[in-house]
Image (cartoon, rainbow, N blue to C red):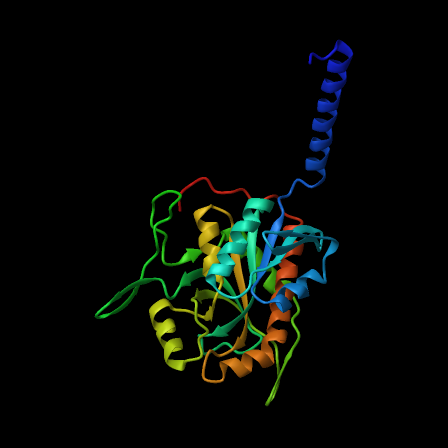
Length: 291
């Protein structure tokens, strides 16, 4: 059917109006959304409770919550435990929300003997401690080929420099609750270091010593490097922040249950401060260069 001249004018007017509305919406919130992930529901809920203008949606069975965190547009999601779950959730999130950056928050076991429950590691680098080549003379870490460009990933996946700098600024400004110990109270420390990831809950002093010697690890967990690899391969800025819940030794399971809420709270507090700093920054530009 052919349109009349009047109909054609109306159609064009509607198109122009829609384009105008889209431009206004982009100007009102020109910053890309920030994605925040956590492996445990409790870690995610601590951040969800702080959101304003909350909206929930389910994508492929996964729950995502959008809103404002200290003025920053964010999407928050619970990944579940393990590298496959983390990679799946990260991929869904990237495809549907196109975030400007992805941050992983949560708990971890300490590999660095100087760290105790409640302390925080801001990951300058993450690595898969169980990815590599197992030979007769031992295990050698090695990155896999990135199927998007054919280049081999590095063993250590570097955090985005801008996010890392903001995290360090947040660490100087944030106030964490003091931690009660058998000898009194202490203030949690925040360090920049190496977080390693594997599909195993580490509760072994021998394994900790190995991770410390082989990868110079400060903390060990089960999701961070999977998220980091997805983001690295797709050139999306990322950061992993982990608060210590246990020492990854024989009592790791019991200690994790005892300290995980306090550790998760400390991590969420730092993440909220990072979001506050992000809300006043210019949008992060995706790198077009191969790292």
